[in-house]
Image (cartoon, rainbow, N blue to C red; front, side, top):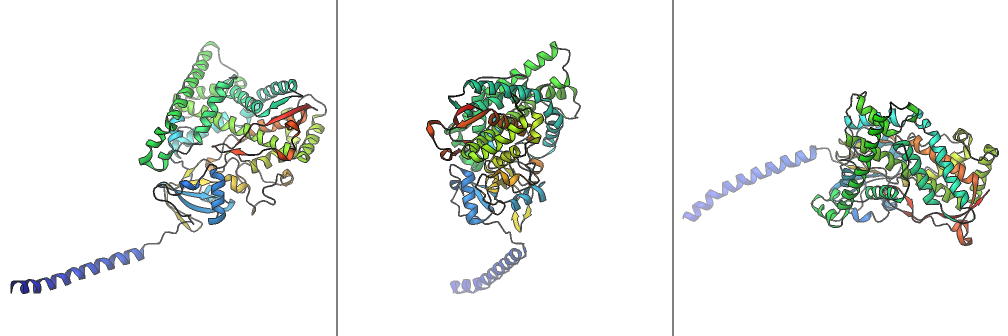
Length: 502
């Protein structure tokens, strides 16, 4: 009897619960239907925990290009837990770097740059905000302006003459041209930035360590609970060791300049190097922005990292392509010889007359963009991009290497053909998105002119003074053009040539 009574009591209770449950589900369904559905770009399948990290391979620029051939020029990947947008066409790049540039102008916080670049307080890696705007303004107006770049003309020409004299002594023998080019760019930038050269392999090796580290993929950036892996494999330790070595070097540079300032009653504006200018800005506080010592060091590292490596590798790839294509080499040699008119060296004032030289450099930058995957950006707000919903906090990678070789933008896209730039208004200043060797928008490289003039001067004088041949009778077309990936794309092997005076 009691059981029967209980059964009768439970029936209405169960019905009530079911009714409440149905109402709850109904509300949830209506709420779900009323919310706008998020549309993400195409995405390749991912694995648990690591997402798409396994698909990067040893050459991420090539791997991401291959994925884009299958999934399209705009892709959504997951590197661990970090959502990542990958752009592989001019159209997508334009949307990111022009239409929605402000939303995509920040940088993700990355372990290695934070360690070696004073908490990411440099121009390249610092997040978008007032600090970055003030710092970029100082660099553009005071360090890399047209007048400032021109003021270092004598430095460039002297170091160029020094390298040529060494190469002349090596004529008839095998020369490691890669080492000579790195030495040239290192010496020019050292004198412009620090006031004197730091010749020798120790400084060069330290700079190479820095650039290699900036190209390392840190596990902890993408899977935070696996950040111990970076310590286990020694990446974090190497970064801290390199940061300490560079910090000690830069402390010495700053102290040397401060002591000289005390001894000398002011320098003329033309004789000032970049450190002199930074210290003057710090002392006089004319910008309304206080520069701390670590800020100065971070900017100096940017000048070296963004200057020496990208400039030297561009010269190296240009000469490699010229050796591989004798027709182009001969045509360039004819141009520089006609303009030089028998002088011992080509001065900077003649570079503007050399249309084919500029075309060769542009074509080199198209096929061998110095930074194949532009420094990652990060979205600061939700964005509707080409019909897709991109959430705030998404890492954005622009594959400049793939864009420069896109057959929809370039005829015979993988062929080295400088003539395509001869009667063409396309330049590398960030206004043409089918070609982005220096990026574009707010985060475009501010040091374009500083680097390009070194490339032009070096290439013009090397091909003017020398004929270059591969060793051991190797055919020009057989030159190994293999690359090694890093934040800057280098030749895998040094460029070894036999030099002959012209």
